Length: 376
Ligand SMILES: Cc1ncc(COP(=O)(O)O)c(C=O)c1O
Image 1: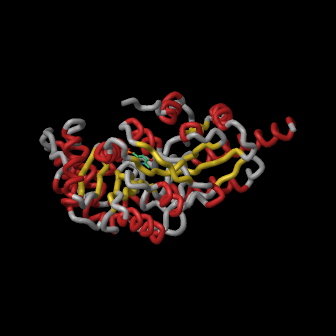
Image 2: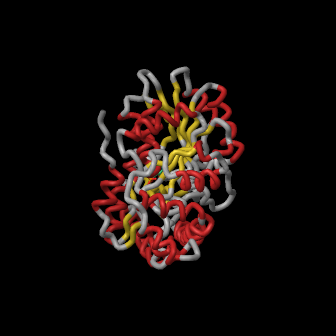
Image 3: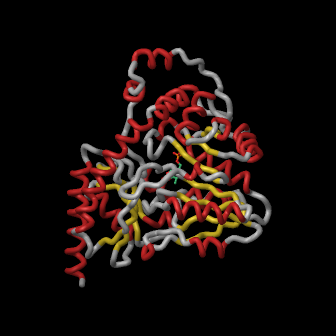
């Protein structure tokens, strides 16, 4: 079993010192103090944190945390299993699906772990294409053609990383119904739900045969808590995920679970910050993109906090991202997703510095357009 190099994370870590980090897919920052203040009695909440017993929580997560997640997702607490981030949740999902000869269907492009984990586990990976000319919509007929009797799992990701495309409720229902009718596990990775920049969508947790992956890292912007979950109504699958978890991370930490529960119980306040920052930043990014058509092209993201941008020249986005570093900007080159002429730019971070970062971005694009004219 071999993992491919995680090119994206390697690039981001190599250039972590850049003045403006637009490379990652995260949202605005929170402190522990701010989380405790959400309770309305920060002193009492801090005392409770200090008095926690530092022991292993249950593998599926503390009952109070599972209840809070279940209430937010509109499901039963026993259907929720907690993991160390959406990343760990995905590992156990694919691990449970990994049988000799089995295949899984995933989007292209995709969050790298959606492809690398099943490949490393010996699963055959089949990709449906999210096409720019189609607004990155999922084509149900393509998914149908890819499926056969060895298909174990169909994965969708909405809002999607990196494109920011979203799947409507009707489309989600149709994909779910197709998978359910064929006995294929339907997995919806919703870590960017419910951050929308236009038409909103419901969680797939409402669909009876959906497995849903959520986390605290993306929409809720609390990646340092390392908390994610799976909503799974099939008890045998839940047992399989938790059994493999027993051999890996065993459980989360009581401190993380305590803070995570506060965030979930006050999720509307936490999400309000993500929404305020992403909406303001996206407006600024849109202004630069509107003036950059000679150099850059995109489909405006409908959700999440990343945009997927193409060099209209079809040129080398890694060189463009290298150049961006001279302007203090960290962007994520598309080669990590297999797209040499694309890059990803985040708009969930830096409410205080994003306007300055957009001035630099506009200057970078302007200089590129000028150089392109000179070299023409
Ligand atoms: C679509 C998607 N799913 C899952 C994850 C995993 O994140 P975490 O492990 O922090 O929950 C990410 C992280 O970028 C992601 O983009």
